Amino acid sequence: MAEPYDLVVIGGGPGGYTAAAHAARLGLKTACVERRERLGGVCLNEGCIPSKALLDSSGHFAFAKGRFAEHGIRLSGVELDLGRMLARKEEVVRDLTANVRRLLETSRVEILHGTARLAGPQQVEVASAGGVQRLEARHVLLATGSEPAALPHAAFDGAFIVSSTEALCFEAVPRRLGVIGGGYIGLELGSVWLRLGARVTVIEMLPGIVPAMDGQIGRRLLRVLKKQGFEFRLETRVLSAAVDGGEVRVEVESGAGREVLTFDRLLVSVGRRPLTAGLGLEELGVAPDPHTGRIPVDEGWRTAAAHLYAIGDLVAGPMLAHKASAEGAAVARRIAGRFGEVNYDAIPGIVYTAPEAAGVGLTEEEAKARDIPYVTGVVPFTANGRARCAGETEGLVKVIGHARTDRLLGAHFLGPGAAEMVAEAALAIEMAASLEDIARTVHGHPTYAEALMEAAQAARRE
Image (tube, rainbow, N blue to C red; front, side, top):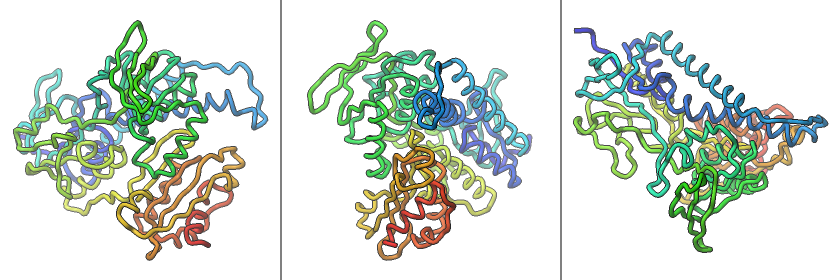
């Protein structure tokens, strides 16, 4: 019998391929099983990467069409070539998924394509066109990710009522696009098609958008998106959605009563659910949570079955690619006998709208709920020299610090470069930095990032 693998990873997304590469580099005999033809999981194939490619392309188009003039650049006849834009998106995806394959190959990870299921505590069956292969493994890691959650009264049909996957590939710009859900996926994809000419209406049950973000950031982002042309139907519940004559008719209910909204396409973006079906968990005594579908794990990401681990969207926490990657690396280190953990207080969340919104650590609402004595410092981008030069003055930087210890508890951004600036704040939280540490750290001028320094100074009343 062949020597068993030290680790078999089921799933080739950010969590899975990161875990496999780390494990192999730490000397473990490792295999990675992926059901798709390309590695990279949802993130690279139909999530983070293609959406950001379209956000960048559509942002360039919108800027060229509407804002070049304020910089003294005159253009005429700006036209959209949607086919080329979508082709570029696919080129980006192809190149990055090929890079993941090279990463695993150079790390000496064996890559298998097929559908995997657990055949025993330390056995994995891989079914492919070539038959069924059984792998022996000392440890197995589940990293199968998630899929868009459906609504029973607005079922996906892949053409008119769609998930985020299909919304990345519309062959034409819809004249009227409805979006159910005011979270980051709906706002990002809504931004893409709004910039390209669609009228976008967001339907959200809650009184605000991006509920996981700091409330001040969410409220300001809502105002900015309205100015861009988004229509929001907040505190509105979807009762039904049906295709009629090539249109989607959506019955909604709010404080004003019931009405029917009509769209050319309807994007249902109400969250995601873990992909656990067909893995054979029940036979091993592993029961996903009946409400969330998540797999219970201990502090080391071990499930109820010996030698079986789970990470990423399968377990508790935000469904973010970088969270899954961090967990994958930590699990690989633990299996190799080294130290591995993830500081969940230092995981940033980012919404790639324009302006971008980002945050890490506690929100002000969370600090209040925990009865933590805190101080805040807020600096608007209207006061930032770099933002003024770029003409990108919408937004602010906000820090939250402990009122007695001065420790940084959270940092929140709305504005240009927010997705990059949040990394400094994440490092500060990871290193248990104080507001004074940030306030005294010299930042380049003029830069967007110096607003973080100034917000820390404002919180300290300096």
